[in-house]
Image (cartoon, rainbow, N blue to C red; front, side, top):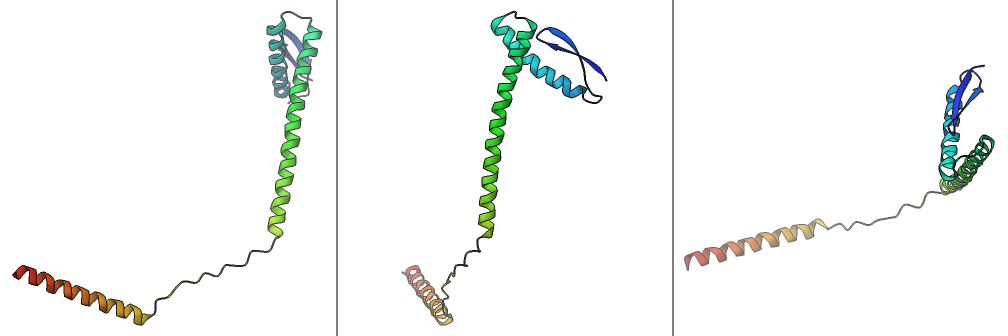
Length: 132
């Protein structure tokens, strides 16, 4: 079993761990050390047992808070999944019928004829103005 030296609150500890778990032990020790250093900065020198107890309790508090957040997130995910399932189970809405007005061809032809006459009248007027 590999031995790993970790530092918690300026104190070194030799800890055994399973092969391959050294990185997890180091990461956990770094978290505990951060809490211990915060504690030492706030209240100063304390016995190792008390420092470890307080730092462990601070980590436990953070872990409990994270657990509460995870439970809330899981509940929200479950609720959203239920809503998605409910919405998928509903029949598709009826397609809306949209009527697009169609202009009859004879009206279009009549408008084209009127436009051509208006242009002819305009050209005549312009020609008369040029002469005058």
